[in-house]
Length: 322
Ligand SMILES: [Zn+2]
Image 1 (cartoon, rainbow, N blue to C red):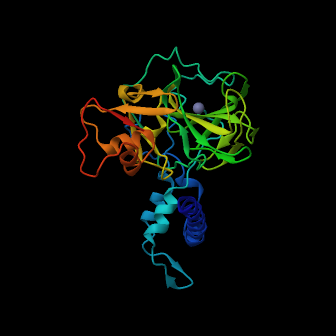
Image 2: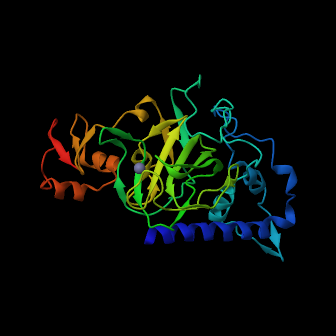
Image 3: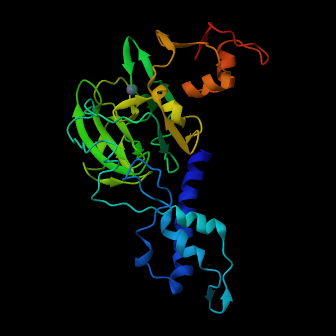
């Protein structure tokens, strides 16, 4: 599973780089005075959006003549870049509190019906995403047996570790017999909330601060669930977004570093189900890669399922098996 290794490696490299960075910079810097008071982008709507990258950039700007044991340190841009990724949080604060108009409810997941100022567009920073589990997709977002399925199902074995998708704070840790089972909801600094359902065991408490990649629970089969899996939701101000619009579930990464939320983010996917077989009705502007991305599958898999040759034309109105 190379992507997992890569992630772990990246994290390790990041940590090493950070330690090395501290070692290199320590003789000439004072830690305390650089932390606060700078702002490099003022266009953020959201006060709680953490300014990830401000801490070290000013330190680094004046390191031209740094010496250690008489040897001039060759500045390593990659180390500096890694340093910038160290993030500062106020553990007492509520993530994205302004955006959520001060609502922080630790009893119920869906409490945002009264929100007044829903922005027309909002840019979500996805840079620190961590895949909650690497199980395959077993059920997609959308209508399913006449009910809306507001998340995506990923195969896990009971006891598999589930990781936080982004940095944030645990808002809900509860049991719901007819629905999510044991579930967690986490508010993130980037404005999203994620929900993790059917868990067998919690590893965090309400109000715990979590970082992307922290273990938060073990997967399971609690609540309305047949067979152990993780039910994963991405929500913005309570509204469900199709997770495949954000995450490439084949490669365990986000499609991009940012995701811009618009009204279109909340449309119901243009698909229906017949038994366990899913279809997508081809519409203007569709391409195989677009469809594949949307349903978390691949172009090759779509071609195979629909007996399409590599030069077949996608006709509007026809139904593709997903
Ligand atoms: Zn589900």
